Image 1 (spheres, rainbow, N blue to C red):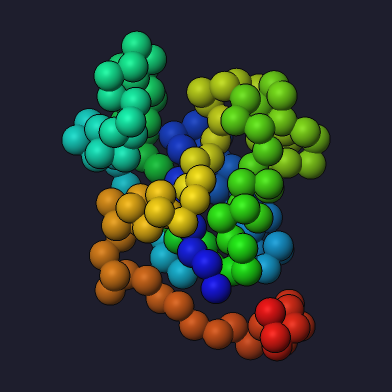
Image 2 (image 1 turned 90 degrees about the vertical axis):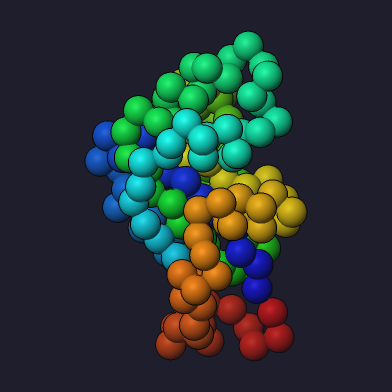
Length: 152
């Protein structure tokens, strides 16, 4: 099983799309093993987006991500990182394919609703920014045998 961090950004929360988007992840067979609502502080933003802090667009990014609450989640499943990223679609909502989360709900590059880790190292680093190990609630749902083969 693989875990990935997902953030439902301020535009997602403000537009009341939390349930719609989490339902898509659950319908796909991903398990939510941690979830909480919080406000991203400027310090947390700088840690999360460390590679962008010196770039000219960073002040706008920080202003956006700290503007309203977010919902942070850890999703678990087979190939969770690539599955979630495919479900999100292109970063720019204007270029995201219909049927993807961004393709269906976003028409902006920055207001693109959801952040998801882009690889295993990023997933672990980002998860540690938002969740303590004790907050992860992994389990084996009763539906697992009808969601995937036992050897997957």
